[in-house]
Each structure stands twice: as structure tokens, then as C-alpha cells.
Amino acid sequence: MASGKEIRGKIASIKNTQKITKAMELVAASKMRRAKQRMDAARPYADKIKRVIGHLTQAHPEYKHAFMTVRPVKRVGVVVITSDRGLCGGLNANLLRRLSGRVKEWQSAGTDVSYSVIGSKGASFFKSFGGNLLATRTGLGDKPHVTDLIGSVKVMLDAYEQGNIDELWLLSNEFVNTMTQKPTMHRMLPIAKEDVAVSHGHWDYLYEPEAKDVLDALLKRYVESMVYTATVENVACEMSARMIAMKNATDNAGKFIKELQLAYNKARQAAITAEISEITAGAAAVSG
Amino acid sequence: MSATMQLDIVSAEGEIFSGKVDRFFAQAANGEVGILPHHTQFITTLKPGEVRVLTGDEVNYFYVSGGVLEIQPDVATILADTAIRAKDLDEVAAQEAMARAQEAMDNAKTDLDVTRAQNALAEAAAQIAMLGRLRDQLSKQGLMH
Image 1 (cartoon, rainbow over the protein chains, first blue to last red):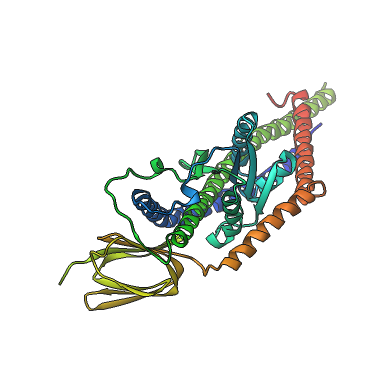
Image 2 (image 1 turned 60 degrees about the vertical axis):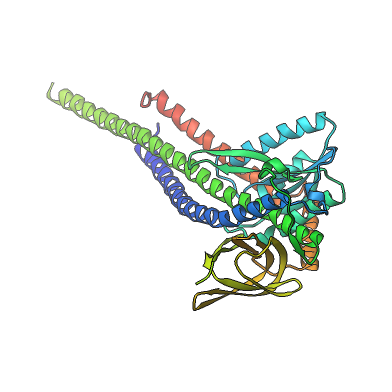
């Protein structure tokens, strides 16, 4: 019989687990707040560089950069952003499911896909998924920096410039709100005119030193900024997903404890009842 | 005084300066440039160096580690880098990222992650089994619904 002591032991052990999940929930909540601040801090740059690129597509440079030229698509590249750690619900699983769905579509259309992956979860996914993995970056922590991402982005930009990929996509989680994170996919290259603004007037910049150098520098930073913004957003997603997952775990542990407590009380009551009936039976035997 | 223009200095990781200024100086690729309001459309890369911003009698200095400067007649934008960039430095970073990808693929079978995941799975399975047994035991005694 599950003695009272045994149940008490289980209750204690679940209470310990609950303490851990509760602590993780609180840590994730505070990290999420900080990640959201970093997200907001990244927004001005993203907006401004988008504005400059918008102006640029309105200008009429004699030089047309490869990043702005649409080519027939035979091969595509995807930058996949995942978290480094688990225990964040279905965040990475949903994202990677989205990826494999899209990859299937591409492959059935005869399009080759290569990847640059950020985050350990994505890196270990590709071990079983296979595919042409060009670059990996893991261990960015909660505060990713642009400098950490330059390598992974450059590999893809080089591949694009050399014609090894004809389109570059970005796959990451979008922070809708604390409860919802949505895997989103969008095309970074080539930069399409409709991505930014419509053309009016006929003018061009003065470039210094050369149009090519300036565009190279600018467009590279544009892509880096998109990847950086997505990475920071993904951290916010990871933290909020973890917060929710840990909150659920804590609640479940609480439910379990309640159930076990009830069982414990019943077991104790049964033991007492048994004892009393023994005593009364004994007393009846003596007096009878 | 005369006209002012909007100047925004931003880096990928945060805003550095935003406001109306009379004029400013920056270290462009071909040498220092001074910009006044109503400058023609102009775009240039920046060298690492200071940006000097003049507003009335006030002078502000900012350090940027390179980036891009864009001028529209009423708005100037400096997209500052967060670190000094050089072609060979970028190249090294790219090589590293590629090497890591290669390494990850090579070690696919003997990876720590896999063992760690298996351990976690075994642990979870044991816990579930334990809880299941406990529940059976209790329900047999009619102590649990």
C-alpha cells in the first residue's frame, strides 16, 4: 500500500520541481523584457536603412547592383534563426516544420536549397535533415551582437554574388505578443522595388567614392540589419515561449500536488479509521 | 539663425543621436565632409572617426566605427557600424561560420546534443512511468478518482 510517507515524498519532490519551473518562468519573464528593449533599440536603424534603400530604388543609378537584380530562380538560400536552448515549448519545432514544408515545395519545383543556420537547435536539426549547410553560428546567448552575425551573412551574400543562390530568404519567429510567436519567412534578396516605395522624379545621388562601393557597403548592412533584428526578435520569442511553457509546468505541478495531497489525506484517514475499528472491536471483545 | 536639418545617427543596436542641427562634419571615405542644410542628395561610406555636430553654440562629438552617410535635402542619416569593419576581418568571420557548419555535419553521429537529448528523454520516460505506477497503485486502493 502506498503509505502516507511514500506520498509525502512524492509531494516534496514535485514541489521541488515546481520551484525550479517557477524560477525559470520568472527568469524568462525578465529576460523577455530586456530582449524586447533590444528589439526596440534595433528598430530605428532598421527603419532608417530601409528609408535609405527606398530612396536608392527611387534614384536612377547607372550602376545596377546584383542585390537589386532579379534572376531566374534555380537555387535559393535560407537564413534560419533558432534558439540555442530548449524548454521553450514548440517554438523551434514549429519553425523547422514550416521550413521543411517550404523546402519540400522548392525541391518538388527542382530548386536547390542551401542554409545558413543560427542557434544550436537549428544546427542539430540539420544533422538529421541533411541539406547543403553553408554556415553555422551557435552560442549567441541572450544578447546577440551584429558582429556575431557578419560571418554567417557574408557566406550567403558571397554565394548570392557568385550566383550559387538566386534568392536569399530569412526564416525566424515573429513576436506577435507574449502568448503568440509566429514563424515567418520573407525574401531578403533580391531587394524588390515593391518592398520599399514607388518611384517619382528623376534624380540620382552623388556617390563617394564609387556607386558600387557605396551600394556594396549599404546593401550588406541592410541584410545584416534584417538578420540582426530577426535574431533579437527571436530571443524575445524564445523567452516568452519559455515563460509560458514554464508557467504551464508550474500549474501542472500544482494540480498534481493537490491530487496527491487528497490521496495522502485519504490514506491517512483510512489508516485512522482502521485503527479505531480495531480498537472498538478489541474493546467489544473484552467487554462482551 | 538660418535653416536647420534633421540628423539621425543610428547603429544597429541602438539610436545614438536624433535632432535638428545647423551643420555637421563627418569622416567620409575620401576625406572629411561638412554638411549644411539643403545639401544635394549625397551618399558615402564613412571611415572610423568622429562626427562633429553643431547646433547653435553647442558642439557635440560622436565616434562612429564606420558606416554609411546619406543626405537628402532636409534629412541626414548616419548608419553607424557597431564595430570596425574590414574586408579581411569579415572574411575571417565567414570562414569561421563555414568551418563550424562543416564540423557540425562531420560530428553528426557522435554529438553531445544527441546524447544529452537521449538522456533527457530517458529521464522523462522514467518519471512518467513512476507517476503512472503511483496512480495505478492509488486507484487500486480507491484513493484516487
